[in-house]
Length: 143
Length: 143
Image (cartoon, rainbow over all chains, first blue to last red; front, side, top):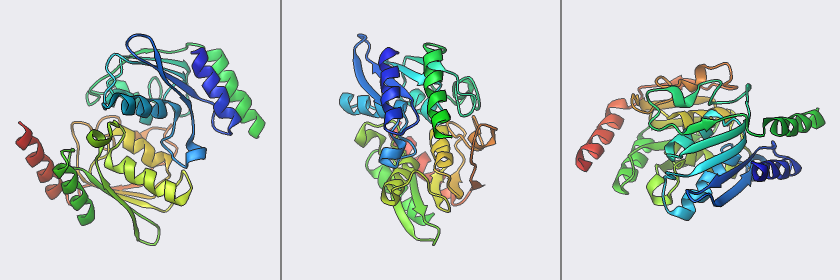
């Protein structure tokens, strides 16, 4: 999660919402790290989670990442929750809850529906104070 | 929707789930057409809707497509529903309902939650018989 927090910080320095994600293979090796890039790439889907999943799938030559784990500094939104499910990821570790736009423990709770074909194990609140502080400082500085 | 159905057919011929999407600008001009490419690109996010939204945003140099409309042959999944919302699209026209994996009128009903910050106008059932037939033939041929 420290690596994800560094990626979040770097995203904030680029003027992006400071969220970072790290993707770990079944051997525990980090295979992708990124932060939000929606502004830079003019892509509303370029959240940190989406970017590391797309990168890891491209590297693996597969749409699925069974046995892989994702660390992200903020509760994923519904879009990212759904792609985590599509990619059949094993575990999701996230930092701060996102009461405004989250999709796991708030809002549409993507993994709870019978039409969700795969749900990862979910561990929230990992490094949440630091992750939330990053977001608070970012938005405070913009006001 | 005829153009979207052609894109769905082309996707099926490539071995992809036959779903097609068309993105129309505020003047009614088609600016992006694509079908599913998850297999071809090893990308679990490469649904037809996601691809045309990414392409149109890239062309526009913006994460948002206010005033733009999307035509898709199948009810979007939760991931695509969320990116449609993120992109602030005006209208969504879709063909067949997706009782198995949909995210608009089935499953997590993405646009109904208070944490959904923008919901397009939604018109379902446009060309649904043809869209559903395409999917049925595709899956029947694979069994």
